[in-house]
Image (tube, rainbow, N blue to C red; front, top):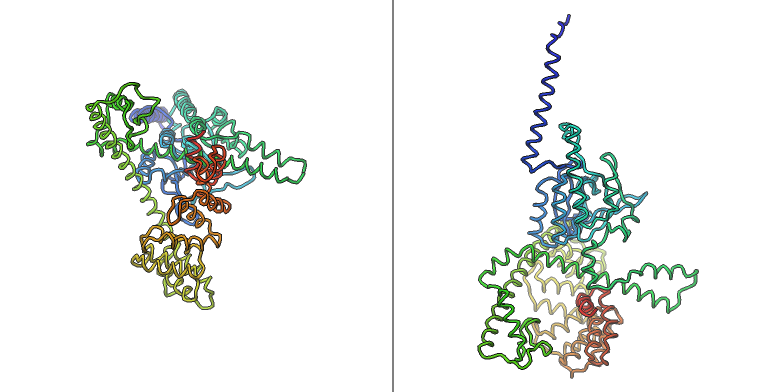
Length: 612
């Protein structure tokens, strides 16, 4: 028989339960106060905490960028900055693979990404198709950017990918139990405007904000590719505020797609030669804009790197004081007086006729002040530039070392004991040598190259030249490298002929001999080597070993350009700009510069930016 429960027990249990709820609620309030106020801290919790690491392909070889995978938690923003401190802009793009996490931390990460002008990327998908992800993930369920992760994605200076799951922020259930409905409502009302303001500041169109906040905590809005690719709503691509920076320097044709579509819908008629020429011009203009955009974005990232490290660099250069505003004004004033221009002066300090102070010339005392101020300016500038370069170089070197290590790890070293050349042709041995060289297994590469070279393979001889010239697995030996290069050239390798010409042109390995350089360049050019044609053009343009002849230089540059040689195409543009070997023609210069820029030539892109 069970004894009856005393009457006072149930009321006491209820009272204790209520008291416990109040205590927990007050404890939670106290904890929130300690953390800096009531805000929705987590959003769609993921199953594993985030890892931030250098991004890898499926074969575990590094690619530029970092991967953020797993739950976003406090401290991740600092991890992001730590990676930036090590690798600089090599951590762009930021590949996001996360089902959500801490809202405040996500917004902090997004703001940092925007400040550093980094790009963000998520997987690509479309209706009825599996998401496409080029990055290796540790947990397949993280192949998405959901909930709070979208806030990080929003921070990208340029954004790509559309496998996003959006919904309004909310408290996880275990935390929500500690709130009354009034308190939960207050928490929601506090966080919503903060998130909306952040998204607006990150150039997220109201279209996406509305869709995100229309989806409750049990729903999600995943944009299709056509939605995400819309230029009206700006989810992907360079964000509108920075797009205007690019458009101030790069010319875009907004009707490219429309123009190409007109050719596709030309009533099924075959394309004429004129049609093909027009299509080529349209796509070339699009390529020029793309390359220009990439150049400007890279410049913005470099400028952000300099800004981020300004305090450290200024500390290193504190012994070289910058000019004060009044000193700068004094230098500018003295630079405008009618004196001979200083060839080393900055652009704004060079004396130009339109800006001279008419009828005035600098006194000896003023010239002394000018020289002193300019010396101070140049010393500070040089120190800043050198310190920035040292930081940039260290970051790139660090990433390069990690990349090399990843290649080694992804390609297990085969020992020379496994070497077996039976039944293989010299060509196949050479191919195995190149594979071993690329995998940085230089001992094995040496075996394969040597065996193939003994059979007279010119490419294998060139491989031995790489090994000795770069000191890969052996002591660097320029003389041996030259000997193998010469043998390779004599056996018909056009690249070896080109490098023989370069050896005689620069005179580092053998005595400088322009005639011999021309001999090897022409042998290589006769076998359709465009690089050799470009070097011949250079020798004629500079009168090295031959009389200076711009017309002959132009002839060789055009031969190289016909084979798609980008530097030659750029030089043709330069010749038209300055009238070297051809009549001066700015319009023709622009035509050739656009061709070079479309092929990725940075100098041509900068020319087009400077000559709008």
